[in-house]
Image (cartoon, rainbow, N blue to C red):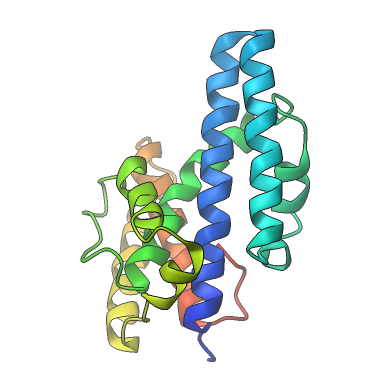
Length: 186
Protein backbone atom coordinates (compact mmCIF):
# COMPACT_ATOMS: atom_id res chain seq x y z
CA UNK A 1 0.00 0.00 0.00
CA UNK A 2 1.65 3.24 -1.03
CA UNK A 3 1.49 5.84 1.71
CA UNK A 4 0.96 9.52 0.95
CA UNK A 5 4.10 11.60 0.93
CA UNK A 6 4.88 14.18 3.62
CA UNK A 7 4.00 16.91 1.11
CA UNK A 8 0.62 15.33 0.39
CA UNK A 9 -0.11 14.99 4.10
CA UNK A 10 0.93 18.58 4.73
CA UNK A 11 -1.35 19.79 1.93
CA UNK A 12 -4.30 17.78 3.29
CA UNK A 13 -3.61 19.18 6.78
CA UNK A 14 -3.61 22.72 5.39
CA UNK A 15 -6.87 22.11 3.53
CA UNK A 16 -8.45 20.71 6.69
CA UNK A 17 -7.18 23.75 8.59
CA UNK A 18 -9.08 25.95 6.12
CA UNK A 19 -12.16 23.73 6.25
CA UNK A 20 -12.33 23.64 10.06
CA UNK A 21 -11.86 27.41 10.27
CA UNK A 22 -14.63 27.93 7.74
CA UNK A 23 -16.92 25.50 9.58
CA UNK A 24 -16.26 27.48 12.78
CA UNK A 25 -17.31 30.67 11.02
CA UNK A 26 -20.43 28.99 9.63
CA UNK A 27 -21.29 27.76 13.13
CA UNK A 28 -20.84 31.25 14.57
CA UNK A 29 -23.04 32.72 11.84
CA UNK A 30 -25.85 30.39 12.88
CA UNK A 31 -25.86 32.14 16.23
CA UNK A 32 -25.94 35.65 14.76
CA UNK A 33 -29.12 35.17 12.73
CA UNK A 34 -27.98 36.87 9.54
CA UNK A 35 -26.43 39.96 11.19
CA UNK A 36 -25.14 42.09 8.29
CA UNK A 37 -21.88 43.06 10.01
CA UNK A 38 -21.04 39.45 10.87
CA UNK A 39 -21.95 38.29 7.36
CA UNK A 40 -19.62 40.91 5.85
CA UNK A 41 -16.80 39.79 8.17
CA UNK A 42 -17.40 36.18 7.21
CA UNK A 43 -17.34 37.03 3.50
CA UNK A 44 -14.02 38.84 3.89
CA UNK A 45 -12.62 35.78 5.67
CA UNK A 46 -13.97 33.51 2.93
CA UNK A 47 -12.39 35.64 0.21
CA UNK A 48 -9.05 35.65 2.04
CA UNK A 49 -9.21 31.87 2.44
CA UNK A 50 -9.85 31.49 -1.30
CA UNK A 51 -6.80 33.67 -2.05
CA UNK A 52 -4.70 31.75 0.50
CA UNK A 53 -5.64 28.37 -1.00
CA UNK A 54 -4.69 29.63 -4.45
CA UNK A 55 -1.49 31.37 -3.31
CA UNK A 56 -0.28 28.24 -1.46
CA UNK A 57 -1.16 25.96 -4.41
CA UNK A 58 -3.73 24.05 -2.37
CA UNK A 59 -6.69 24.22 -4.76
CA UNK A 60 -5.67 20.87 -6.26
CA UNK A 61 -5.69 19.25 -2.82
CA UNK A 62 -9.39 20.02 -2.28
CA UNK A 63 -11.82 17.13 -2.56
CA UNK A 64 -14.96 17.30 -4.68
CA UNK A 65 -16.95 17.91 -1.48
CA UNK A 66 -14.64 20.60 -0.08
CA UNK A 67 -14.37 22.67 -3.25
CA UNK A 68 -18.02 23.81 -3.40
CA UNK A 69 -18.25 24.22 0.38
CA UNK A 70 -15.23 26.49 0.59
CA UNK A 71 -16.39 28.43 -2.47
CA UNK A 72 -19.94 28.91 -1.21
CA UNK A 73 -21.07 32.26 0.13
CA UNK A 74 -20.92 32.71 3.90
CA UNK A 75 -23.89 31.48 5.85
CA UNK A 76 -24.96 29.04 3.13
CA UNK A 77 -23.61 25.74 4.47
CA UNK A 78 -26.24 23.14 5.36
CA UNK A 79 -26.25 22.26 9.07
CA UNK A 80 -24.88 18.78 8.34
CA UNK A 81 -21.88 20.29 6.52
CA UNK A 82 -21.18 22.58 9.48
CA UNK A 83 -21.23 19.66 11.91
CA UNK A 84 -19.08 17.49 9.63
CA UNK A 85 -16.67 20.37 9.10
CA UNK A 86 -16.26 20.84 12.83
CA UNK A 87 -15.49 17.13 13.31
CA UNK A 88 -12.78 17.31 10.62
CA UNK A 89 -10.55 18.75 13.33
CA UNK A 90 -10.00 15.16 14.45
CA UNK A 91 -8.63 14.16 11.04
CA UNK A 92 -6.67 17.43 10.95
CA UNK A 93 -5.09 16.60 14.31
CA UNK A 94 -4.16 13.10 13.16
CA UNK A 95 -2.41 14.51 10.10
CA UNK A 96 -0.47 17.00 12.25
CA UNK A 97 0.49 14.13 14.57
CA UNK A 98 1.57 12.01 11.60
CA UNK A 99 3.90 14.83 10.52
CA UNK A 100 5.32 14.97 14.06
CA UNK A 101 4.01 18.48 14.68
CA UNK A 102 2.10 17.09 17.69
CA UNK A 103 3.86 14.65 20.03
CA UNK A 104 0.90 12.35 20.76
CA UNK A 105 -2.72 11.70 19.97
CA UNK A 106 -5.27 12.52 22.66
CA UNK A 107 -7.07 9.60 24.30
CA UNK A 108 -9.54 7.99 21.88
CA UNK A 109 -12.47 9.60 23.69
CA UNK A 110 -10.85 13.04 24.04
CA UNK A 111 -11.15 15.65 21.28
CA UNK A 112 -8.30 17.67 19.82
CA UNK A 113 -8.44 21.31 20.89
CA UNK A 114 -8.98 23.51 17.86
CA UNK A 115 -6.75 26.29 19.24
CA UNK A 116 -3.85 23.85 19.68
CA UNK A 117 -4.22 22.63 16.10
CA UNK A 118 -4.36 26.17 14.73
CA UNK A 119 -1.23 27.13 16.68
CA UNK A 120 0.69 24.31 14.97
CA UNK A 121 0.02 25.89 11.59
CA UNK A 122 0.64 29.49 12.63
CA UNK A 123 3.77 28.95 14.77
CA UNK A 124 5.92 28.41 11.69
CA UNK A 125 5.08 31.80 10.22
CA UNK A 126 4.63 30.50 6.69
CA UNK A 127 3.18 27.55 4.84
CA UNK A 128 6.56 26.72 3.31
CA UNK A 129 8.11 26.54 6.79
CA UNK A 130 5.24 24.36 8.02
CA UNK A 131 5.75 22.00 5.09
CA UNK A 132 9.54 21.90 5.58
CA UNK A 133 9.30 21.06 9.28
CA UNK A 134 7.12 17.96 8.98
CA UNK A 135 8.35 14.42 8.59
CA UNK A 136 6.14 11.36 8.53
CA UNK A 137 6.05 8.96 11.42
CA UNK A 138 7.17 5.40 10.82
CA UNK A 139 4.76 2.82 9.43
CA UNK A 140 4.57 1.01 12.79
CA UNK A 141 3.35 4.12 14.62
CA UNK A 142 0.69 4.76 11.98
CA UNK A 143 -0.38 1.11 12.09
CA UNK A 144 -0.63 1.08 15.88
CA UNK A 145 -2.73 4.26 15.90
CA UNK A 146 -4.95 2.83 13.15
CA UNK A 147 -5.53 -0.38 15.12
CA UNK A 148 -6.55 1.68 18.16
CA UNK A 149 -8.89 3.83 16.06
CA UNK A 150 -10.35 0.71 14.44
CA UNK A 151 -11.06 -0.85 17.84
CA UNK A 152 -12.68 2.33 19.14
CA UNK A 153 -14.72 2.73 15.98
CA UNK A 154 -16.01 -0.82 16.39
CA UNK A 155 -16.86 -0.23 20.05
CA UNK A 156 -18.76 2.98 19.33
CA UNK A 157 -20.72 1.92 16.26
CA UNK A 158 -24.39 2.25 17.03
CA UNK A 159 -23.70 3.59 20.53
CA UNK A 160 -25.36 6.59 22.08
CA UNK A 161 -21.95 8.19 22.64
CA UNK A 162 -21.94 10.20 19.43
CA UNK A 163 -18.93 12.27 20.49
CA UNK A 164 -16.59 9.29 20.84
CA UNK A 165 -18.09 7.72 17.72
CA UNK A 166 -17.37 10.90 15.72
CA UNK A 167 -13.83 11.15 17.09
CA UNK A 168 -13.20 7.50 16.22
CA UNK A 169 -14.64 7.77 12.72
CA UNK A 170 -12.57 10.84 11.79
CA UNK A 171 -9.36 9.42 13.19
CA UNK A 172 -9.96 6.06 11.55
CA UNK A 173 -10.52 7.72 8.18
CA UNK A 174 -7.37 9.85 8.46
CA UNK A 175 -5.23 6.94 9.60
CA UNK A 176 -6.65 4.76 6.83
CA UNK A 177 -5.51 7.31 4.27
CA UNK A 178 -2.11 7.58 5.95
CA UNK A 179 -1.76 3.80 5.54
CA UNK A 180 -2.91 3.83 1.91
CA UNK A 181 -2.95 6.94 -0.28
CA UNK A 182 -5.59 5.30 -2.50
CA UNK A 183 -8.12 5.37 0.38
CA UNK A 184 -10.53 8.32 0.56
CA UNK A 185 -8.76 11.45 1.76
CA UNK A 186 -9.75 12.70 5.20
